[in-house]
View (cartoon, rainbow, N blue to C red):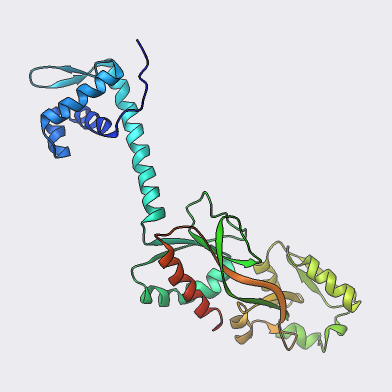
Length: 294
């Protein structure tokens, strides 16, 4: 027997699955809102395409043949995969949901405390926030957009600047009361808190101001370095404006009188989607509004 060539039409699988499930062309037709003869004709076309009988037709009912039972599992899997794929496609191109990735600090300190404002202004939009310390790839994932700091471009994505990123040195009030700092020239012997991405900046500062630190604390991530500084373990490097609230609340003190430009900025990054572009614009505009107010 020759193997069937082209793929089966989807409506044939739908008619076959319903008929097999109900053991009736008539009941399947009622479920699909077509005539029983239309269902019967689709089943005949499917059997002709496969070169196999799928049903044993009796006076009052139908039964699956051995081939029909096997093909029923094929149809179930194919329709389930189609439904899942269609749902993912709809979520990506037609849903009012935006899934955004950002660092835990930005989520907890900036976005979530003011999320009610965005929801009140745009009740038709549903924002799903995913946090990660790593830059998440948008292409090939269910993520729509992200907040990133750095310098674009990022492959196959558009980037809209939210605001400039600046830096300063931070320590707790208790630490500075015990270890006063009048200028960067007086950093000799002070405890320094490193996080993974701060090594190059600290080395540059040490080379310029010729100082030797006292204790050095090495931590894996930025958030941990801020918590360590709050506990009085030393001086760390922080980025603004996202730390404005932390400084205003007195959790940390900015050592320099003016923040230092980093050459980088915070960006709203999104992957191409014409249907969701209006929602991207609404979210980006809101982020641009809240970041300078921090």
